[in-house]
View (cartoon, rainbow, N blue to C red):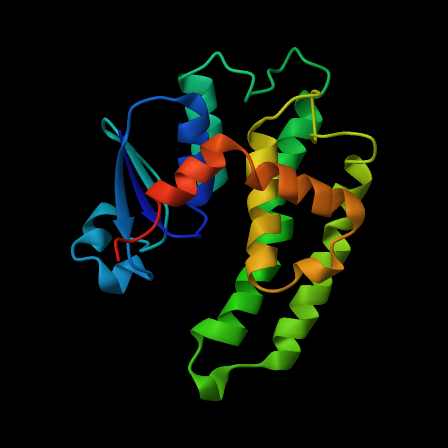
Length: 206
């Protein structure tokens, strides 16, 4: 099994999951964007996106889907909520929401504040999508009232998927508007040993 990763990209999700699972894998740490900076990457993933997971003949490119694949294929594990558990529907909802609702607006903020050439940057677009992001994470704040984790009273890949979005927002300077539950949650996720290992392993060499 091999994971292609860029520091602090969506590939943090499967890398963190692999560390929580404690299974063997090979890691390729690439400069961003890999389609331009890592020779041969488009042959591995014609989309040029990150992550890519190779597991035998299988190639996967969606970060949250990879997390779900890993816990279901290489479990059983408490990182996964199964269909017979009461929180299964909520678990799936958080997994899909993590990218479609939370990470998407952050990608727009990143693009129009840092990635585009200076003449194409657009502070108004970035501000509009930052407001969108903050309005959407109200659901996280509400879900964490009196709780440490989103579902099933334990840490799952739903926390990895949603937690990555909060970490992404923090790196973009948006965490000053996080409410108390989100702040507490983010701090606790950042202290998990598996997350710390993923950050250490996932950095490009100096």
